[in-house]
Length: 238
Image (cartoon, rainbow, N blue to C red; front, side):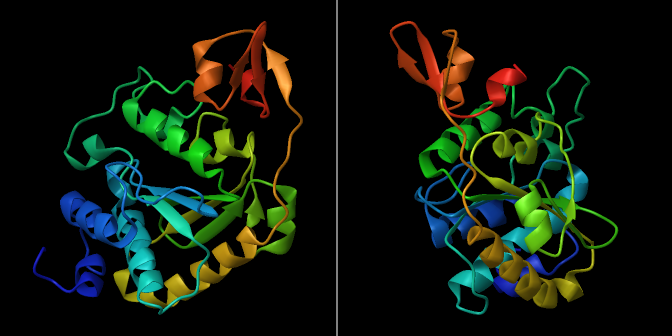
């Protein structure tokens, strides 16, 4: 796979975690989980489950096409493979070890790394790419659902789109079908959706003082003398 042109490699019917990470490291810098410099308007995530391989390839191809000037997108950071274990054939137990449902309690190193970068960048949009039978787009805020070609959803606060909607971002969830021949056309559509989403007014929440807990600091809180000052709503669910 390393010897293929990126478009051919990412339009295949399988994915290679090492290839994808090497490519995005070259294009965006950073790593090893999130590639980008911080301050980007969009944070894009994929690679939670083994069936997400189309999403991993599509997101990587989207970034490649953007960097080549083929599609127009807002500045984007990406974590193409959040759960590498899923692509190594490691079964996921029922003890909360699935990183896709870990962005509230932050039990895994990958979830903590993504969350740390999130607070560094404070992106206006968090885009989650998942595998699916057919293309589908969903939005987590009313402003996004009313403006974009996406249905409104209310996600679990444990998912990245749910946790980050409680903070500062409009969440988007894209289902990517396993049909690489459609990736080129689909990339232009998704790039346009991301561009329009990044132009939406930011999500703002008033700061609240909560009790002093390390988890609140991981979620962007600032320690003060008698507690933690936090300007998002994750404390309601922890």
